[in-house]
Length: 228
Image 1 (cartoon, one colour):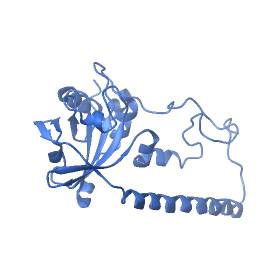
Image 2 (cartoon, rainbow, N blue to C red):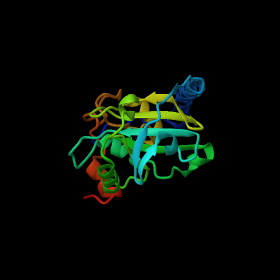
Image 3 (tube, one colour):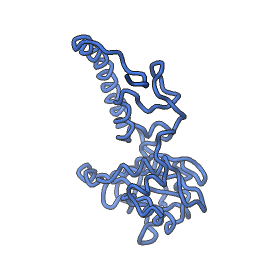
Image 4 (cartoon, one colour):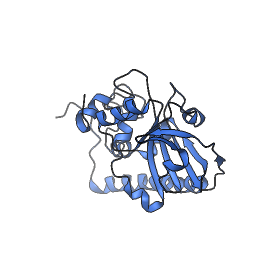
């Protein structure tokens, strides 16, 4: 027998009944998420200054970061000056997004912005195999103005462009970014979940320190990038 705790074993009818009961709650959550999204679409917006960021080809106006689209999602990647390996959480999170062309069908784009100098940021992107377009705010107050100051945390911001005018429409950080991650969605389907000590799990379930199962930046680089 397994030394690891296991869910109780029941007949198929009992299992189906429990699943149906859970499904009612899952559907309620889905309806609530639909309602939240509807409220998000009704948020007001704030006009942004005409920031200049640094891209692969040099300085670029914030309005031009949209690359012709009218909507823009920005992930503000944490950055620690002088460090070879940047935030593992940010590195792992952005590593998920490899096929973003689908957003063009919705008149949108998704990019990474970081406080690191653009040459260092691009070198790090290659090291870890990230495929998103990166920009630097090292010489701009943009990051600080959208909740990701130098030495600060990560954030997700959404912007809407009307001609050359850019507006901020939404922001989140912390666990608010989990809804954008497919890895957590998949892991949360598993019987043992994330195996982190803060989670509500049955007695005897394998659990360890928070973040214990997360891939490090070095792990991501070994899987997808140059790794040096």
